[in-house]
Image 1 (tube, rainbow, N blue to C red):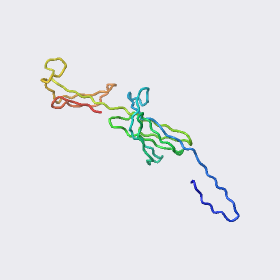
Image 2 (cartoon, rainbow, N blue to C red):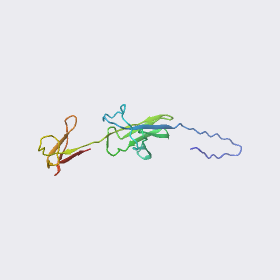
Image 3 (tube, rainbow, N blue to C red):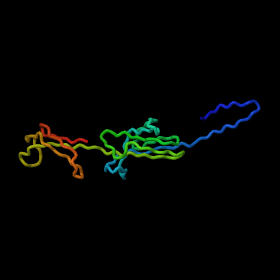
Image 4 (cartoon, one colour):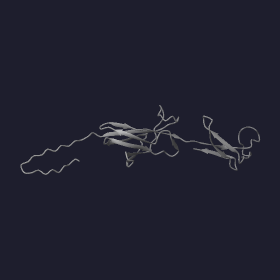
Length: 174
């Protein structure tokens, strides 16, 4: 408390002390983890406009900020305590780090929490009957429907299947 009511008897004396503790700062960066290794590497840009939420140790929201153009965010003038910092996954991205983490802020000190996200992609094309055998779809070459295409990751692990549509088009999204 910054004020105290003290009743003083006639002719008496009193002493009242006030103690203050330095506040600290919580900061970090939200970044585009282009290689998906959960670490911000040289050249990986920050992501702007990502919502970062400061919560108390019980999970109650205290405040939110949006990351700046360089991906940085700051919660300044905070009391020493334990906090939870959470970042909202931006549209078109997947998290490569935890999206929520606990930090302990010492009196007058600082704490840091950074968050990585990798942009998702789209693979699409057309399955067609290559009548002239040149590997290029001509307007006269028909698309092939109901062809099953399989997607595998860089470790050759199966991801998913899609089936071409009536015009031969297909799309793997995400």
